[in-house]
Image 1 (cartoon, one colour):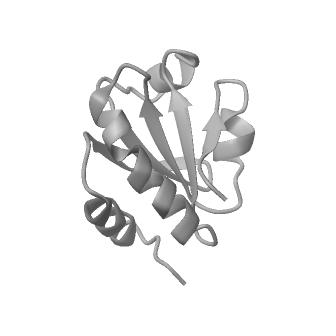
Image 2 (cartoon, helix red, strand yellow):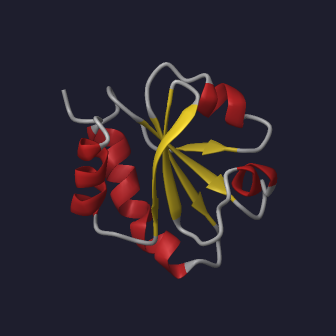
Amino acid sequence: MSTVAVTDATFEADVLKASKPVLVDFWAEWCGPCKQIAPALEQISEELADVVTVAKVNIEDSPTTPSRYGVRGIPTMMLFRDGQMTSMKVGAMPKQKILEWLNEAGVQAA
């Protein structure tokens, strides 16, 4: 399973009501750093499919959700658990750093 495209319309069901943690990547087509981290997020979504869902919100197509959560720069990654945003990182980072961040937030491979 790879990343899940989420929109303003599906955010509540796909992220806030999810049964497991959801890493949400706020991105845009024109954003170079967003494209840079996309392959790492795809790999993480496959490697950690049992413990976390990786979702992508295109801020151009779905502007309401990013503004609700105060997204000012992209890429912005937020970790949601039980309907609450529990951790956030702004900017591109290598796969290992994303995994370390998830680990610190309590999301680790089983």
